[in-house]
Length: 409
Image 1 (cartoon, rainbow, N blue to C red):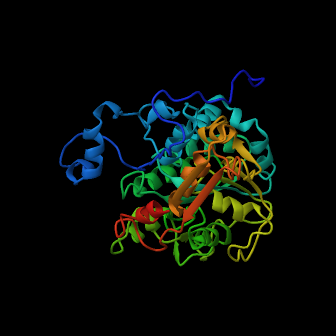
Image 2 (image 1 turned 135 degrees about the vertical axis):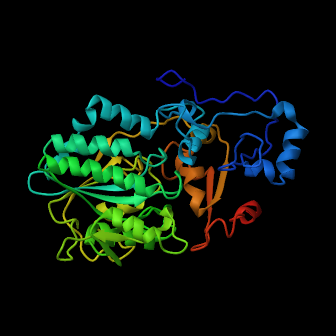
Image 3 (image 1 turned 180 degrees about the vertical axis):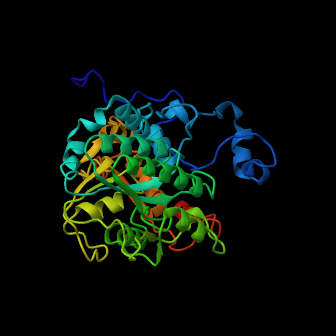
């Protein structure tokens, strides 16, 4: 019995025999909904799932994967693969990033911590840059949190603010970017009326600019770096609203894949590159699609692409995106502390585990499953296999992805 009052010992399962392998297969994105013509799973032929359900109906269970059941603020909040794998791996409910940020903003504690005080030192002579997904989807970020942070920072001394937006269209409807930009532009206009120099400085679609994950395609992050930090992009506009409307008018354009753009002044100069003495906050609360940019912003020996210019900045994440790497080293809200996960229990009981996925989901069966920890609990008892995902091939073209290759492992 540990001093904290719990035991690592796992009792025997009443039905499962000892010494037999157990497979946990996660169908990320599969769910139950109304059985109508709009439900693609209901309409599709699913013989394997049908046989599993009909062959042992007494073992078939439905579990909630959204809202308070997985630690999100309310039951109106859509679940996502991060919180789902956290909950599955831990077997318990923990307050998730979005809820922690909500609580910190509501109480004002976000402005009292070391992270905010660190970036605040740049407010007098520098610019505050906010980089992240402009969306109310609640999976990676939320617009209302950005609005509160803008208000709080401006009330606490930020005199010059630049927002670098990433359009969504994945967790929210495609085309909703226009409305989000209009809302943000209105908020920034109100700040300007109060004497604060606040503007949108750059943008791009989340799947093409900045928000890659698991080091699948560093070119995505480089496109973001060039626009956000260097102030360089192939498209230049006088306003973000003009940018989004114009780029969306191109054939086959959508919010997820909008090309990078920068906002310029009347002389054609970018209004918001990141310069020495500035502060940068990545506003996403979810880790997987921000950690690559965090490495580029924080690591002095970063070598994944040529950054060209590396400004001396004060950088903080909304949360710490990787507890094992301590990245970023400064953050506004402490991440959820998830301990005693199933993976840790298994290795402490001498049980070997094998986790396999392709690149785009590899972090889910390792990092998120293990309570937002990188690496092994015990390398002698764990094996992780990553199957490289196809680069440049969209899921609608190759919906099977690497399922067969993972099965053969």
